[in-house]
Amino acid sequence: MNVIIVEDDPMVAQLNEQYLSQVDGVRVAARFANGRDALEYLKASPVELAVMDVYMPMMNGLELLRAIRGAGIQTAVIMITAATEMPVVEDALRLGIEDYIIKPFPMKRLQEAVRKYMSKAQLAKSRDTADQAVVDQLLHSSFSADSATHELRKGLNAKTLGAIEALIRENPDGPHTCESISAESGLSKVTVRHYLNYLIETGTLRSSIDYETGGRPRVLYRLK
Image (cartoon, rainbow, N blue to C red):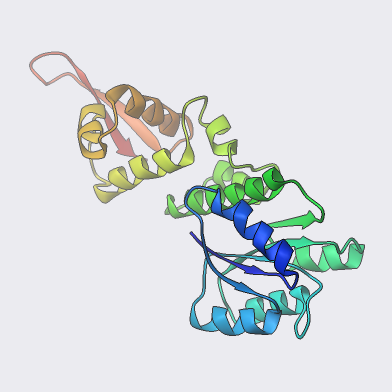
């Protein structure tokens, strides 16, 4: 995931880059000291996430955020700022930021915010449609980088769930078996079975038993 940093304090910008570089799957694509330069970059090279301050020269963070939304740029935003005025916080929230982090902050706080966004983005990409549980996870502020794992029970995660769902949706009429999905995904049958059981519980799949195998019956899985 490509990220840009928009921060006029070079020491803070460097620190943020160090924090972000320690998150697996994150690449800092560029750094900017003001919102105007960041906006020009995003118009030409939109990225998944922008980590930005509020107080900046030329174009402050709220002005940049409004410009991003007005231009239809689909870049998510995490605010990192010393701005504690409630109208500023409310404006940022209304403009759809992913998180609002008040300086000074611990490294873990930023990293958790980024992982939370990555988990939400992965969940959204893994679904063609949404049920209420998925919408709740995407909307609720309690969604964390590990919330999908908690929902899926210990040992399961949203990324693997998305991969299994994608395999199933490539052939929606199925039927699929634990063995066939295991072979296609490279995951163990035990692991696949956990996810299939979860997809049944959440109403994504239905199962039936095939007794016409000439041997041991097998469980078949189809999309609902």
